[in-house]
Amino acid sequence: MHKKWFRIVFRQRVFVILLLLLQVCLMVFTVYSSSRTYKWIHYFLYVVSIVVVLHIISTSQKPSYKLIWSVTILLFPLFGGLLYIFIRLQTLSPGFRRFFSEAEKRTLPLFKQDEKTDRALQDAAPAYKTLAHYLIKTCRLCAYPNRHVEFLSPGEEKFARMLEALRGAKRFIFLEYFIISEGEMWSAILEILKDKAAAGVDVRLIYDDLGCFMKLPIDFQKQMEAYGIKCRIFNKFRPALSTLQNNRDHRKIAVIDGEWAFTGGINIGDEYINKASLLGHWKDASLLLGGEAVNSFTLMFLIMWQALTGKQEEASPFLTAPKDAPAEDGFVIPYCDNPIDDEYVGEQVYMNMITGARQYLYIETPYLILDDSVTAALILAAKSGVDVRIITPHSPDKWYVHMTTRSYYRDLIRGGVKIYEYTPGFIHSKVMVADDMVAVVGSINLDFRSLYLHFECGSLLLQTKAVLDIKEDFLNTLDGCEQVSEKACRVGFVKKVMQSVLRLLAPLM
Image (cartoon, rainbow, N blue to C red; front, side, top):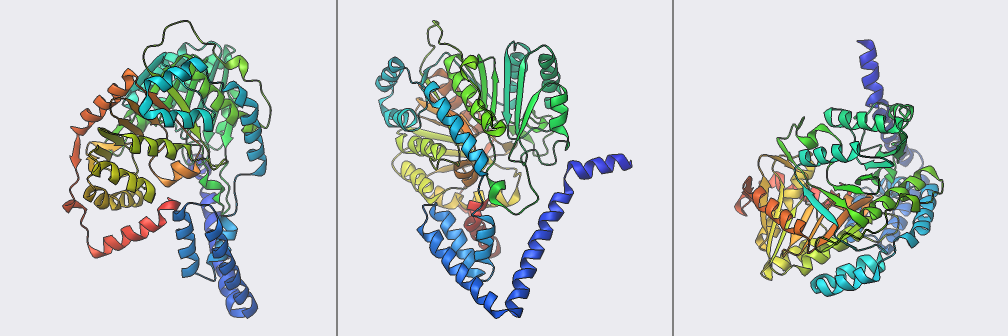
């Protein structure tokens, strides 16, 4: 019994939370006592706050970030400036940034766009020519002819196909996930990984430390290494107040032999396959890609791997050469996003789809915490005659995030956007589809963290059959949804105040 509780305490890292609370208390006590004991420190901190606000205004950060920090400092002029310096100015470690940037530069020549595919894409999808140009020319990504794209929803479908692909692995398995939690799903995958590693398959695993907080034992990495599985932890959680914790690896990537790649919103945990969901039915979505498009996900993984290990590695042996088999239909553009280069790829893809839609725009997202520009674009699309529909969860996983999400409903509904809540449970899909022509499936939520702070990935589908599959799945999902009326958005004074405060704090969620 004592061993069990000892393991739980250290597994959940309760001491980390206690250390964080201790730091907050010491920080507040220091500022408070100093302001009374030493007036010159009091005045100095006021000057620091003024300088910090001027610095914030002059930066190129999103207006929402400027607003929240400026308001915080104005409300707490003695404490706010110090808090900003102590927290906001910290970033990912210089070593990681350097390794990541160097790995990207070394890998860039391998993202070589086939000219024939590029010309065919420009001719086939003129309505989204600018979006394709942005991803290919500006972001240096690749468009591929569709060899195989399969839309998998819910998570049980992805799980079955993933086990099948893992069992067939002969050369390598690359897994990169935000969340891994022990249970039926992970146990089944782990057994295959152990067998494959023992058979000489190159098995590598990346997981986010904060995403797996309280979900894995503290010696998990050592366990994996003992099985022959190469394992790296992204951005280890440290018991220190720092925005280092903001930048997470939110990607969901599985690459097998360079032949198959899985991506989407599905992590590795029993709730994603409806084995242990406390929120009702868990609705999620994933893509299975085959052919040359898999190479992009292989390169995404290897760039992150090199950044975490600090070691150079030749990526070419892991890439699959183009095959002579004819393409099925349409095109695939895998893409990634990160907070290092200040290029908001995920937001630009979504914005281009919103502004490019002419008939309909259907969206599934677990969180709806929007920048003003995205809100305005959705309303403009609806007012321009586009059928804009958004499905969000009815059962919240985080009450404060759900309350913030609902605070956006009223303005959107007034603007003509139709909002639906998924009543059977929780919807975790990150899906956008428009005009029977274009769709996105990935890891990117419609919230500030996914769009501006996290490492993310997704796939843009143009004129593939899977686009119609995604549309059909959306319409079928509506059968289990309840449309939200403007009247239902009316709340009392206290709740309205809470929503206003949460809207202000939205960039920090």
